[in-house]
Length: 334
Image (cartoon, rainbow, N blue to C red):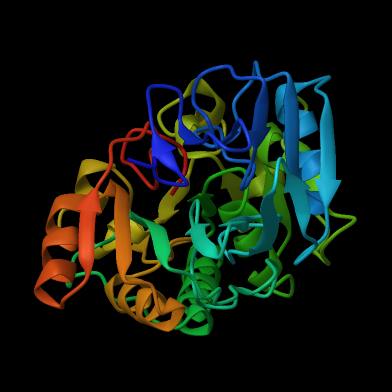
């Protein structure tokens, strides 16, 4: 029996015909990478191929690696297998990978979202026979409000805190979420400060997107400097000694998990804003339908529930285990 064009093994998603892996989680010779988050772009591979816009991101995170870049929709062939990158809309530089061999077409999404966030190249529908999809928020309970509405909510919160003489501390993942927040914060309210991890990553992507000025929080930053202003920080900074100098402060988190009742309390933050870099339930279903795929493989997230629902709709759907984390409660990817 001929093996599938893409197979899941203990190192990642493997294309045997081309001898390459897609987003492998263990060191391999040849790796094609969808985006820069640490669960998809890992250190230790001999050769990396990714979209051009993702190169500075993964080089900053992984160091001196052997990486080559491709443009959107540029076909490159390895041992007869055609590959190309297509926008995933997840974060800056995020891509889907289209794989074609002898008329058979697969698409691996990595992580993706269908709402245009204004900083990522918008998601593109890619027709295929087999579709590998994340299911981070693969439950009907997840339904996102428009980004503009959420950012209005965040700016109003900041303005209220400023009126009360308090510093607003807003948590978001350093790559993707933080820049999305920065893009739409209203600088007329006050100054925007950043944690060092946020500032470092933002400086890497500034040449690619227009962002407002930010000020790095340093050991010289005084509490009085921050009052009434906003600080963008990674979730890992919550509860640290770093944040104590900001008293009095109010905390907020921007994450898809804030749609769950009790999530704000569990994260010990004052305010939760539902803003995700992944598809909601409707976005997942609409994306799959648009591809025309008959076979769907569900990876990280609510894969069991989501694949069962797809089978009820008539898809040939199953799950596959990976080491991708999606928007988990245990990482900074919010």
